Length: 549
Image (tube, rainbow, N blue to C red; front, top):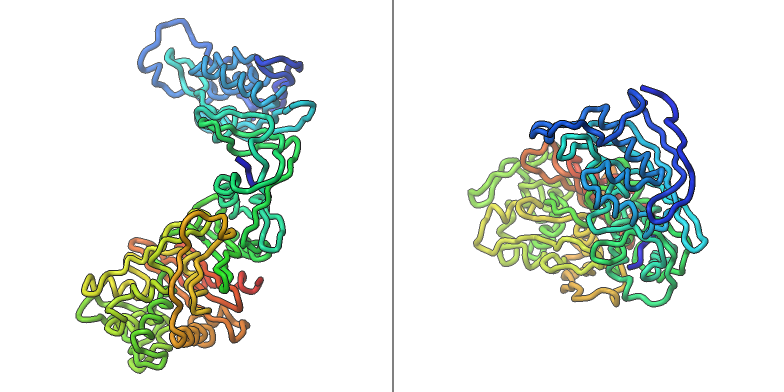
């Protein structure tokens, strides 16, 4: 498939150089830090092993000497000796020989690191030579030293000894790729790569699998790559001859993506998404750390008070307006049910109206209005925001899961969901879409590639009634002008609206911070897990993305 794009200091020695065939490699250059010279892994004694010997942990000296001797033999081309110092000589022999022959690797240079426990890290520079084209494959991996059945120190053989992450049945291959690479471009035809935008690397790999065979044109590259155990082509490790890639156009905007990557950089468990409010096109996806969980598209967390956008729309549909009385009193309940508390920064205001409650994010002002919800619940309005259907975005995302109770069901669950708690599960993609729907009055299911490429149904819904949409935008504008979003959204124009949120988690030291907003034709949302107040943690992320639009 196409792929998106020591105590004794000094050198132990520079051992022989020379070429050899399938049996091994030539040219060896290895460095280490040992307590003493000499030693050989797997040499052992002549006495019969005992159970204690077989189960023992090798000493630090044995780990260092055995690991170094194995790497010395491997780099020096002595495959048989290297494999004999492992706990699986036959399998190791096949693996080492296959690495050379299948990968067209003529020699390796290995530099060991300092052992830690039973592990020895090392770096490899593998020389690849295929049909007169040469390149270097450089990487870091590690081995583990245990003991064999005799109790002698031995390298624990695993495919990852050859290359990090290599699984059983995988192999390193050099040759012409199965299909052309995938050239991914943004909505303005600018090429984008996972190296440029780390948050997109996982998504771009998915694109290669999902769409590579659907696209026409291009010529394959000559590459060193991982062939998976099922025979499919995996990750490209290095390219010897660049082919012409197939072109995949996305809805992304490289400028906004760069801004989003910068906005989440250095933050822990943060994610943000930006959308085009007119089409639902996904403009940016970023999360931090980029090697961790995708909190932008794949988080499943309660959205906190950002969900009051949907609740407010439902209350307006039920007959309320921004000026309708909605007293804000800490500790209030609905129909003698669960008592709710407001954030410490929200003071009691018995004379509050819905607009005031929305702007300052008063929980009790909302839950006391549960009797005004149309049909007694949130489901019908949530449907207008596209929240009761599975979304077919073009890359895997969890379904929106607003598990709305039926009228007459669990009343405490209903009031909890009114303020974005309870069993609600959302992510920044969903909440950016909620803001976009509020901005335009119409739900556009988010997409990241052209509709024609996506198999299956695209979610749709009826638009919000025009009066509801107008009043909802006024509420979100109020949060910007004189509410909890005012500080972070300072300087945005009259067509900007926002909602802050923080979602409490049982046992957590701090709530999750949420923020969603729109400005012009761009809507964005962010989540910072454990971030506390949304305006302070997630708000600056969203504001930075919107300012870049």
